[in-house]
Length: 521
Image (cartoon, rainbow, N blue to C red; front, side):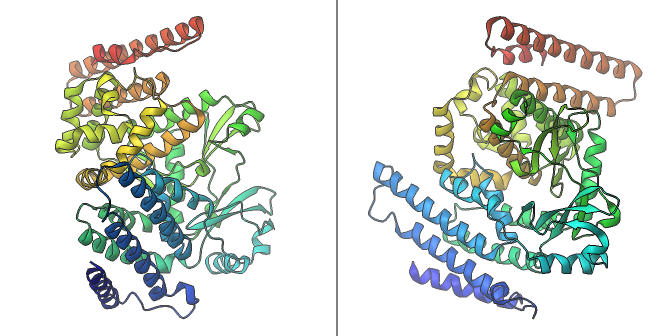
């Protein structure tokens, strides 16, 4: 097997060399040479692969010793992967952050270890930031701003944000791309592709090529800050009816593909319960409003902000109205859902909420899950198959069920890999988004509340009615669709009122939403 690894290393190097990836720009320092970055990634991949190939030779499968050892192998492999991401930075950190968000798809050792990458992103020097601004805007910092904070407000894998003040007195946030990211990203993705193919050759059950496919598609969009600015304006206009949503205004005259200047918005991270307590912000209100925002994006518009990690979602009291607001940042990564996909996704969630198991199977299959539809339902909801059968809106999430789900993520990794390669590419970012939102709800202790399912159901009803109206020109049919939509929404509102009254009177919630929704559908 060691010989196979050496052969693999030679093959990877040959592919790497033939593609010209090792050619480098003279301006790069030693650590940024493509050959060095590739060698580091190849060495880490080889060490991790060898560990998995040899660690279990003298241990019987399924024993306590086996599972304890497997957890240790997962842990040290995750740490090696984290060290690689921190060393190579840029695209590697971005992909590592993506993996760290997949709480219910990957073993806990990986997600827990890789989550720290959100706080370990590299920083560019003041000179590098000045150079990017000079090249793109053609002026010095002093000509553009009366104040520019050299210390970044935050640093991410692709860019960092600085607070500044314009000559007219307005405070802005200036997002500046790390200067080397553009040059390195395409080469880094090629390196990942070579190494992932190699790992798949060694471990046929490991099929994570979707990760490279998504990086190839999304990285150029995330590196174009003008695209991010347009996304921000689009979602702001799309959700203008939500007074609690704040999207910072873009300053187009000070924005380029590598620089995005926007209105400065202060606030605490959405998972910071202490900040909310100190500022009199209701945790349940935040959770409910965040659910409304994302249900509207996913089910009604099919235009979804796919990076809601806590650093990109702030909460605050509006300086003017003093009302609670959610500030949505970082609009580089959006998923546009195709109409047929979105309708099947709507129907699947309605089936899950109403405990319609035939519908769960039917629409899971339509979304590409095939015979893995039970696993798909569990992955989508982060619930056990028992809870899915009992009704996810009627059975509360328990710590033991969470442990079961995380354990199964390790046990069924080959099946999960197969599933992720089967489903439409649009589903992958939705799964990541679902996991990030669930992580926020878990921190806020509001997960699986009846209100979240009611919000989803309301959006599903509206989306399906809108879709039906688009398919007919008959006035009679249009009237029937509109009346049915209004009636179902009214019934849902009455049920929500019933839940609120009962909760107020008895001091506790109820969990019979699935029966009500089943009668509606």
